[in-house]
Image (cartoon, rainbow, N blue to C red; front, side):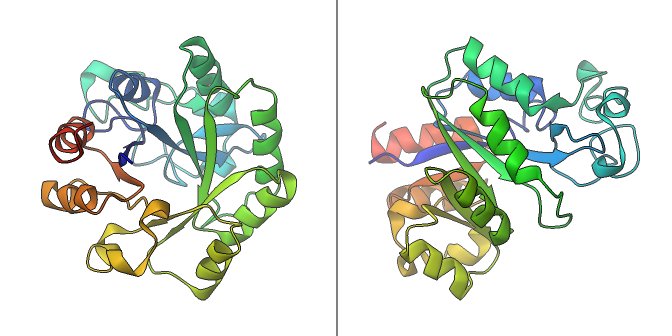
Length: 245
């Protein structure tokens, strides 16, 4: 089994993270999984951004939860990265789903539900409802979160959902849920995992965020399920060298 290459926030080494430009850069390569982060706006719109606040990745200030989609669309999410991406806009989840349908995407979409700082009441139901409105049978949706309560809510809403637990350090709850198969994958911080790989079932593990060549090599040699990385080309080259694919 080849280790899956997971494009973390698109291709943030080549374009501003979690933007259309970043996703297009990532999709130009033979990645296995595209990873995104989702928050909820003041007017209940699902938008793709990593941080709770817009300060780091735009020319604006404040929390996503306190802004409407219209307000967010006025911000520049690209020029912080390079003048080349001046006026890059924030994306709605629905926009990305339209794009994936248009390009006949057939890999996996990994959606991180960002409820580890703000609860975003109703985000789980809105996510499941939004996904259901699109024809996604050609690719697999995986939901991941640091918030186990969010994953359990999604499981109740969609009994066939693929769920992955994100963590810095594992808890008994995560281990118990994985044994009961309510969680189908675990996505640990690579700094915790790298010397504990043999503690866990390799076919369930996709560590994040792994950019160091030696760590990527170790993960590939151990044949873990996947590696979440910003270094797409490097990871693909190393996989070809080590695993032959």
